[in-house]
Length: 635
Image (tube, rainbow, N blue to C red; front, top):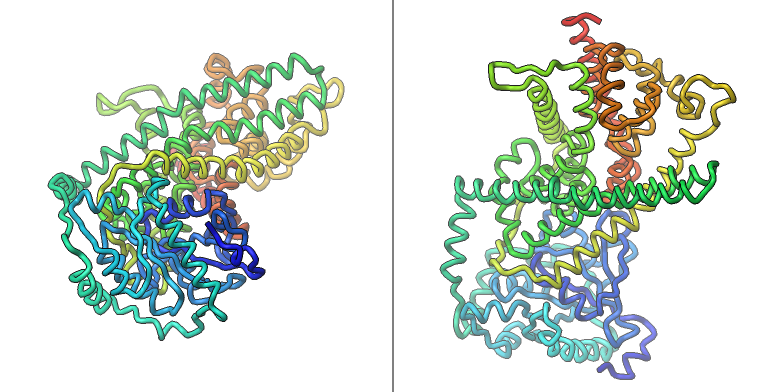
């Protein structure tokens, strides 16, 4: 393996791993480093970077750069790659060399990009990945001739198989020795103008090289061409996409429910055991209502997140996701988004938490921010209990036009209101704050990858990374904030002989009375204001809070039907009820979503801006609804 000469190096060697999306770059990184990566952020941006030492080396770092099709960038991720390679990223050293992962099934595109990288003047070695797939389709490449034509070492790899990278590791050892033996490693210090990014000229040169290095060209199999004909058809393709998305929606919304119920039962059981084992008091309340409830509010999202990312990874790994983006790009472009925003927006109807996380598939930073900003307006499953309760209390259970249930029509209108509002706000962003980057002349510049069977090992690894990141990073924030909420609704305790619910005497109750004048113009009472506070933890908590405020001993279905619904029906009135519904169409999201937005944007300012504009919009729409409804039906 490595020579003692490398081990003695005091200044580490930094190798940049570069390649287009879906070329197997991450799998190559895992093979070369043993997957023991350190995940951090590039200075000043919200893009993750992964760095690890190469297997067998203590002084060789491999940096997995974001995927890019060119040095002429169109997204924030690609911009980071370009800046690192140009030595323009603060805090990042100029790489001592580049390991370029080329897609053997798309050699023309790979060589065009490689020719760009050669202009940098850095030592380069090439891993010709997906060689097994290319060879199964008849491609025969003489890597010796290709290496001579390019002037860089080339090796065929199958990154998803350990034995498929043995030659890569051997060549990497020689590559590192070559870099280390240089008195002064070649480094690039010139400006952008010294790099040739003329795509047409690069493609012509790539064609010239391939004409000598490719012995036998590949032909896509008939099934590939047939699938692409259907998948990219303007009508049939959309139908196929809708079927796929319907399955994803059902999986996230319905299939995860048994697992979520199981987790809720487990959390409730743990809480019940603690109640049984511990005497009544502060410690029991802290553990049951603070710790267990806080952890449970995070863990309950895991089934949805797992299923959502499982489908997204399978679609991405199979090569279908770029085709879905192509189909929907024109439609979503009218409101300032692109095709890659569609799946996150759809999954928002199940839960905003995994939907925000799935916006990672959107390459344009500004477009991703807009998608995250409008996602909370789409009706998530947590809002359904609130809608169902209020609708049952104030909307008659009768039919309209002979076939439609009035309560069902009301629920449908709430969904449509969220969708239309999200589209309108997105259009406003486009109208007054363009979501296009300075290089976004080609907002969806991509090479459609060939279809292939998803790799189970790779998907499992990526899925674990995403789920564990949610649990470790978002979970800690949720835990802390839930404990804070517990303190607010618990202290101070109700005085002896108190006649009102204990929450009325707590800090949350006091706050409810303080903020009542703020919400009075939209018809909210102090009891409703109190319910808003614990409802920050999760939307469903609003029902339990209302039950507590109105002295309902139980918030089960029977108690709600017999007590809470009549109270709302008699005490609120239509104007207040509709105002409450309108508020929750736009209201700032739960703490879980806020924490994930903070984690994904890595910006407290942006998180506060999203929460702030949603609160203002919720207030304005509730005020308008309250006034209009009041005028029509009377206060």
